[in-house]
Image (cartoon, rainbow, N blue to C red):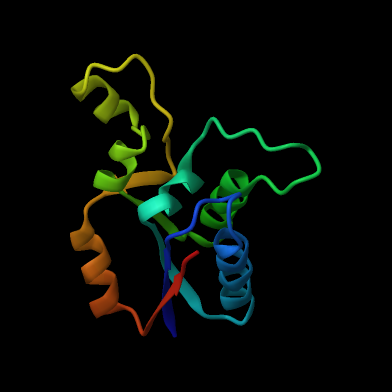
Length: 130
């Protein structure tokens, strides 16, 4: 079965990110394919490479990156929601005249059309929100 996740919650302000990550791991452990995690609304904060949580808390950016490297799961970030919250990849930083960027691969900035495609192509699209 092909799954996709829509994550709407910020990483450390609600349980959505932790729950989505646990669900993602359970999906792949049971032999299903997790196509994509789509980060939208405050969920785009999960892609912030500059996050530095205390050592006794899980580092969610690293956990999503590990999921990608171990299982090939695409990590797509809504570009409009990201730009509103100050999250840019290197290309968008140049385009907007900013000196730095805060999103880097394997996270990729994409449009809402990608989310629509996921809804059409995957067997299940599971949403986690605040």
